[in-house]
Amino acid sequence: MYLSVNANGARYSHMAYRLNQRRNTLASGKYPDISLLHARDQRMAARELTAS
Image (tube, rainbow, N blue to C red; front, side, top):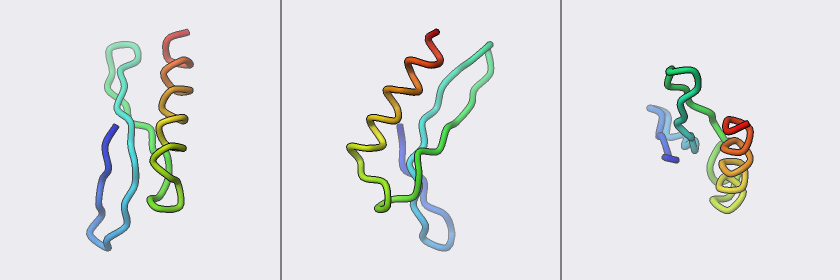
């Protein structure tokens, strides 16, 4: 999980994952609209989906 900052200053939390030998990213939302705790919860839910 990482935080990316765009040129206009917008910050987004992302999660990198691999599925079928391909690297993908999943955006959790714009910071601070989405808290770190909520982004971590979304990451755990995404990990469960990719594992199944």
